[in-house]
Image (cartoon, rainbow, N blue to C red; front, side, top):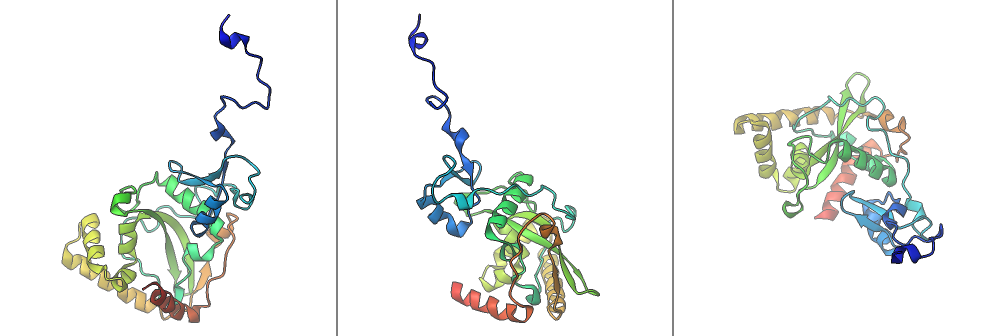
Length: 252
């Protein structure tokens, strides 16, 4: 007889030797609330890149308990729309209509997680992954279509971009931040454009931006609402440019 044979049988409530990670409860914690969740006992899983509670019923953490995952392909989403890296300027009349600003922040966590997972945690612009020492992160970007006749700005796709590709895509913001040259260099490196070609690409993008900024667009987020995502109305179109200017002034 061994020592193990002499031990009494383990009761159903005795978790000795059981991997307690199996008891974890996943959480949807918005970035701006992470310190609050951590103080209440939330833990971070670096592999899953997600917060969790060690067990169900932890006081204070219930409000972040994860909602069901959103579908990998959102209703009506066109995964072929707007592929590759290009300068994609949002008209000033459409500022603050980005998905992160227009959805409940817990829903944003669900969407962000889905987009990164289906991209296999690689940038869909340049193919690179996250690199913390280089301050390169993976972020979610929207691809919009603009119906000039109906004046509708419709969400068509969500795409995973790295920090560098995202900065190049929002070239106007890169200019404001003094990062136009790194953004242009990245555009050339990824697409193979020459400098004259890249400059012409940016010039054409700004021409289209000026044209579209003269229109007040109706926002179509049916791709999200059809997936059960809660929408938070953006500022009125007439106020968006002023709100954006104030936001940039505050961040400087």
